[in-house]
Image 1 (cartoon, helix red, strand yellow):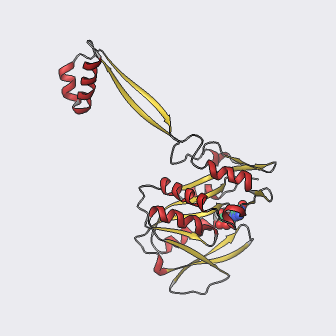
Image 2 (cartoon, helix red, strand yellow):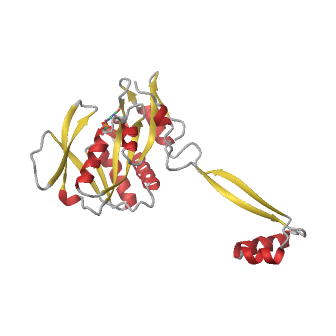
Image 3 (tube, protein in one colour):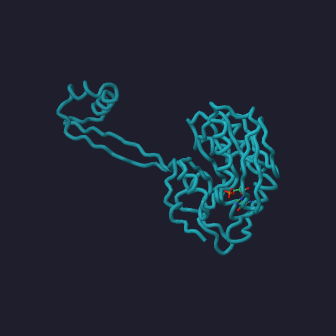
Amino acid sequence: MPSTGENASRVPHYRNNKSYFSIVVVTSDASVNTLYRRVKALTRNFRSFLKANFPVRALLIIYYTVPTNKGGYMDLLKQRIQTDGLILNDSLLKVDSFLNHQIDPELMMKIGEEFARRFEGELITKILTIESSGIAISVMAGLVLKVPVVFARKKKSVTVNDNLYSTKVYSFTKNESNDIIVSKQFLQKDDKVLIIDDFLANGEAAAGLANIVKQANATVVGIGIVIEKSFQPGAKKLTQAGYRVESLARIGSFSQGQANFLSND
Ligand code: 5GP
């Protein structure tokens, strides 16, 4: 089984904590009122404050960090994986009770919101996913981001067609290759596309979707994954290819019927 080392060191694009700087000014005649006025003046006009009040006896800069999210935004997802997930073998996880067969809409909504949060400011115009399990999560993200969702269809084989983008994708779970297709009318060259999928294993599905975006001369803004199995090579391959990968739960290994998550999520 591949090691988890390289994936474990991947730096996420967000932090659970927010850091702040505080500036405390202590002057020679520092009564509370004077200090208050001077700090206020400092925020209004730093230069004139310095001129008027010089010499300042001490300037103290305090750096502090406030936890904004105790335990991670996706604790709920990880708990569901632990309680309801079924580990079928050393690389396959079944989550049929909330994601792949029966769907938990509330959890899907939280997942959609989290993708929207992570890709905030990216001016996404479209979400692209693959049928069928990517659809529910993508629709929730699309609701939050207010953009349309396109899903690639799987076909056994596709003949060349002027109206379709298509590419081959090898399926990790089914052990077979499928063509995936997207109608040309739903992807334009100025689209900024967020790719979303339920699982990331070898990266075939996400790379296939990225290939379709490329065929449309559109831009991949990033790849959002619900469950990344970090011991498989997909995340590393996509990151090395220059894509921003945001995975909500990253599994470093399976052991004794449990999923072991990477600690810095
Ligand atoms: P990849 O293309 O990255 O090798 O595999 C990702 C695709 O295979 C996903 O679209 C997902 O449907 C399926 N997949 C990969 N690993 C798993 C897994 O452990 N459990 C389930 N349910 N699906 C998986």
